[in-house]
Picture 1 (cartoon, one colour):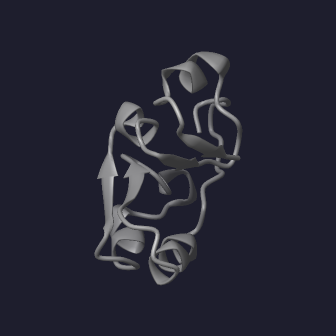
Picture 2 (cartoon, rainbow, N blue to C red):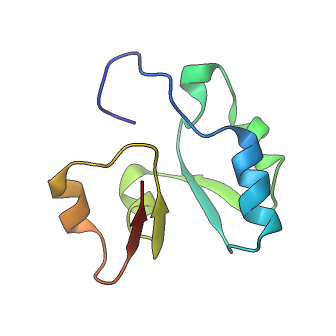
Length: 87
């Protein structure tokens, strides 16, 4: 979420638990995810042993990218060919 200063929109830790439960594989969150809602990394990491944090570019380098708001065109163009964007 890099669109507006002070933006406070993130998926809740329960989304990580859901993704873990349905067996999505590794769950990669951007460093600082949840901080706008005063949620620390442990709130997310405690929901799945497959969850970890990475930088913005690594997050968008995955086969499936799940975000709340559609990223700008330049970010979409950097995604790997054949990747799926869910927004």
